[in-house]
Image (tube, rainbow, N blue to C red; front, top):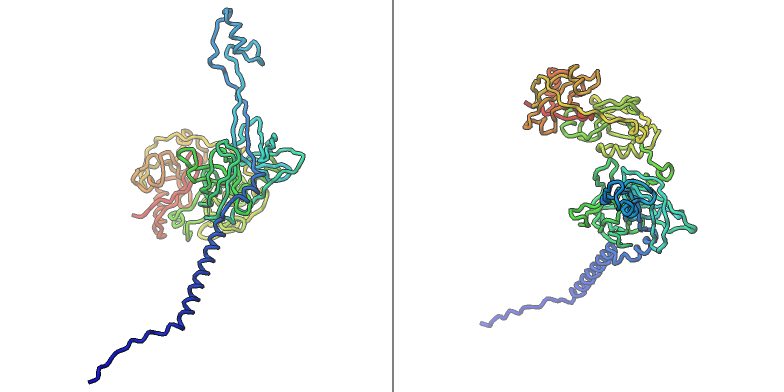
Length: 495
């Protein structure tokens, strides 16, 4: 039988080769485009930007006269043979015949940074850079040195405005919109770190909206190197606009560890405008004490979510005249939502003095709108006296919700220096393992309201708690006062 031979045929590749070449070319082009985009996002050099903005950045040197007593001057009995010698050596020539321990001035110096914001010589820096200075010297990138006058300061935001006089227009920089900046954007810090002269450092925005200690804090966090001496210097975006004023660092060593803070330009511009016009700030004032709303507090009053700012006290002023009450939750202010108490404080401050604004409050399970004409915070704070301290009373207690309580009597009012008409309960002891203990309730606190109703006895407090349970709520909202400072606390009433 004839044998069969199997022949394997090679596939025809003539039609595939052009396709493979096209795909390879497409991949190469795509990779080239990606590389180009990455190169655009990451600048190859900051030299052009640094060269453009540096002429407007200044070094600031301040001098403070500090009068000190010469503690080492010897005490000599009158008529001593060395009396004239030591008097000539130690005595202050401006105070001849003075005591053997005369006072002599010495000079203290501080270094910082700043930047020019107008061609006629207005400069911005930190308040702590020039605080208490008798003389302020400004050194420009060109080597020009001028003496500066203080226009005004705002310790609340640590911003100061200075003015220098010069025959010619000065180089200056513009403020940018910090709200448009994004986490991850490149930034450039320019200043006088550690007294080394003009220096530039680059980094990115690490976070936004940071608060450190103040009511008006809105800091940009950056990993650009910021050290002592950078204070008051500008933080630039890549367009060369100032989006922050370098103010503080977080560091266990005192040197940069990549956590620096610059006050947002959106805060600074408002402060600078007021300092330039008035020499001081003019912040709006609502006339209330407020606190954040917790989940438990929201549940206790029937609010659908923990938002807004709860009013703990209404002072004599704009809110009282408008009808706002303690226990109201402010949900909107001047047409914008209020997320928390810090947001409300900043928005009220920026709203202006004498303006009538609409305020939406949550009260008795529904929203209401009231119109409030804002006052001026600085005037209100100047006329507000501190609240007196409260020594702990020792009445016979009764126990409820982990607290020992006693009614406020005439003797308690006298002992704790309380107003004659004040009623409520005194907390005399707290079980540390109770919900009240975990919420920070302390002996000496006063409970004046529960579920936004006055209470003057333990039985009334128990009734309010029972009403909360019957309404299906897990918490009882009580108004605490400590040292004159009120705050709401939601206490667990579940059995």
